[in-house]
Figure (cartoon, one colour):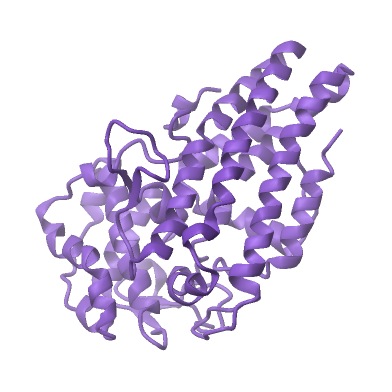
Length: 386
């Protein structure tokens, strides 16, 4: 396995190989891009739907099928933010998405084999740029390109994820090397690679620890989170959302999962590498469903890791104390990451006062109860220690 086979690199991991500001869309997208860039202003008026309903209906079926993937992914970012703003930008969500948003949204999503709403890839992986183009992808050198309301808390929430994804890049390269080391039964190399992985996990977890620095739990819950929900298992949209003008949906409400950090491919990749098994529960079923919301190449990377990794089996069979220690250290780092996620879920969501609009303190933005099962999955992760 090589990262380059999956449009990935050790310097960027699952982040886009391009920066959104470098990709120009055809002229027909000018009003769409203008609206997306001014989305904060449109939402502040209190009648964002009025403004978005005036956008042209673009027939993108042929364009989306043939355009460079980078352009389609940028269109996905712009349209998916507009779609979320239309649904959640006013007090009560609509039952239908108008054709001028629905048809283009479905066209670009179909090309990318993703669901037609905001995905993690559109919210985080493709939605960043560097201030110093010669510098690294770090918190002090990146900005969020497409916003909803804007502000430090929204930016910081997304940029923490961007920085984590960049810092996780070396972990993914090491994962590929570890698959080969285990296959070759090279104890010394596997041990060295795991020890290196442990140090990179320190960097990832240090970034995650900084979430509270500039993202306040109250602001997150009230002004960031409301716009990233989907329309599956959401009491505010019990019948889903109708995509007007989209023939294949036959005017029936569609229920899609909302954007969530659980769509990140980092932890599933580590589960695949370390052969972590999760028992049947609602969160596992939810995460299995979310796999289809990831970019195609990222799905394939996880699936290939899961198929080829025999790392834990090798560490056990080797009987080598140093290898087992190194293996356990990295497994514990993933458990630490999961513990921090659990703590944030409690403080940023579970302990907040519900503001309605489908923004439930007991249900994640993807539409599933989370507190009980996040802890269970963390414990199952830790149970893989040897």
